[in-house]
Length: 245
Image 1: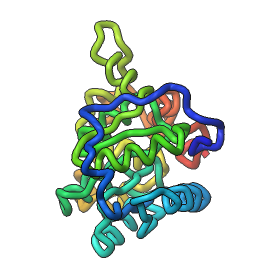
Image 2: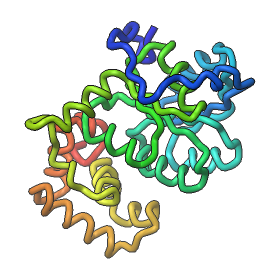
Image 3: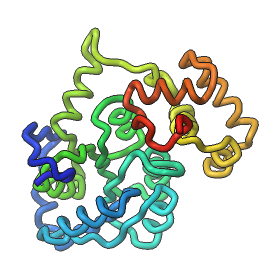
Image 4: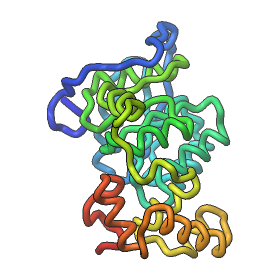
């Protein structure tokens, strides 16, 4: 069974490094699950709690909640969704790893295409899987990153490899800075500049500057055009609760 209940993944596994055998001997790997869908969190938690050597100790429904809860529970490995209300998985990953260098983050997302894999790995994630992966793969990924190695699903590894091939896939978002990317994601969710200012600890003037810089770099005139561009490249889901609604 796959995490998205659409059957086992058949793409295989691509490991960066190797499975650290010491990880398999760890008495208990403490895991936290972060996803804004309760059904997904509950399903992953039940699966992992049946796996030897792994115990889910906490859940969170947003990036903001993840930062707060992880500080109290101190998990070894955190499974992170990307698209969530608020600051989302990208900014949450960046902040969590600033607070705890020993934490290992594995992205578990519906987004297999760029720019998300590169952005999340640059933010410090130790692994990246899609929600269509097999149960056995997510368990292997947890044990691998807990042992100090990185784990990238085969489909994600292919996407990353093709990006560096001449003529390979690229997106208009590739040249955005990390902060520009974060502001763009929050704007396409329909979040107001003042809300973005408060959540990212930026002045409203700075947010406005980022907004207009995004328009210029991406060749759009307003937030609706920005959202449509993001939707066309799979950065946001069509009519998924953003400025198009």
